[in-house]
Amino acid sequence: MVYNFSAGPALLPAPVYARAAEAIHELRMDGHAHNAPGTGMSILEISHRSKAFGAILQHAQVLCHEVLGIPRTHQVLFLQGGASLQFTMVPMNLAHPDKFAAYIDTGSWATKAINESQIIGDTRVIASASDTGYDRVPQFPTPNLYAGASYLHLTTNETIQGVEYPDVPAVAGDVPVVIDFSSHAGSRPMSLERATLGYAGAQKNLGPSGVTLVYVHKDVLARAQDEHIPMILRYQTHAKEPSVYNTPNTFGVLVLQLVLEWMRDEGGLAIIAERNTRKATKLYELLDGSTLYRPHAQVGSRSQMNVTWRLAASSTQQQEQATKRFLEQATLAGFDGLQGHRTVGGCRASIYNAFPERGVTALCEFMREFERRA
Ligand SMILES: *Cc1c(COP(=O)(O)O)cnc(C)c1O
Image 1 (cartoon, helix red, strand yellow):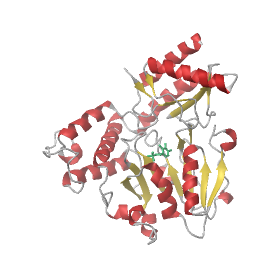
Image 2 (cartoon, helix red, strand yellow; image 1 turned 90 degrees about the vertical axis):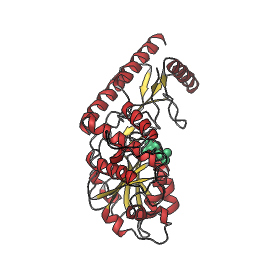
Image 3 (cartoon, protein in one colour; image 1 turned 60 degrees about the vertical axis):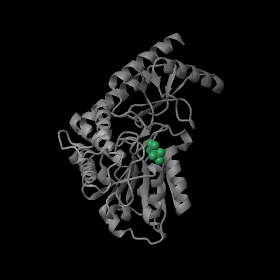
Image 4 (cartoon, protein in one colour; image 1 turned 180 degrees about the horizontal axis):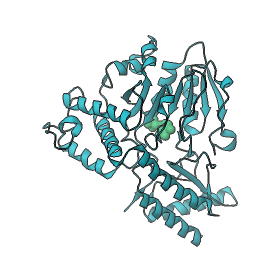
């Protein structure tokens, strides 16, 4: 028995594994609906332009609207290249040559997005939490700092540092907002309509790696027209032939659709969010009540998906040793993937939607016991 706390790819709901395995043997019609007629073919061999795959694509798009709450004013796309390719596609498609792009620096992923934007054009970091080691989301910038920008980009959940905006912030004026919500998409109800464009690598909460969910306001698609952008990097290209301009990750889209169905059948985002809050609260309460563990994120900025902490020690070297010992014993006890990201160290428990509450309870018991023995 292993509890997998990986930050992504991460575990998916058990019923999704069963249905995906079935579709590998034989895909059914109607988005692999129960009791629908079989196609006589595997999801792995079926054409991305077939009727059966068309149904999956369409069903997945509808579920993105209905389950995730993506507004109908926006088009849903399933792209490749990860969230990382969006770091480039966003400035390529949305940066205006006479304007600057405004970024909020919340942590490691925001920094990567900023670096890519700088390659494309004028980029301004208008708020940053780097001076406090990204232990909180920076105070939201005043409108004068982003007025006149091509767009305002923010990472709504920083997977590595474990800080989160609980919702897409309301932004004054008409500057388009762009969000990277990779690691908390589908974890709670959010005001997604506040963003002109949002993107999320599926492998955190929505499916397997190799699919990126992008939603983009249709007005932007009508406007964006730049012959200097390579065809495959234009949102318009992917919107015109919805997600089948080139061969998409057909299996990945099916699994994403199955995950969204699971979310719907569990009762939707409100129910899922309640569970996520319970799981995260349990872990943060343990961290706050301990003298050995030090939570990284400040109250008010704490991620419900990625919980980060360090072990208290009098020197860096001692801390490294204590962390190593903690992680070794955790692995032996069946808790996998608790090491912090290689760039920041420490510990991290990623507890996405599919992660069971009992796994959090078991981890808390293990951590209490470890502290008692320390
Ligand atoms: C994982 C992650 C990314 C990178 O995703 P890839 O699919 O590996 O490109 C970007 N942003 C955030 C917030 C992430 O969690």
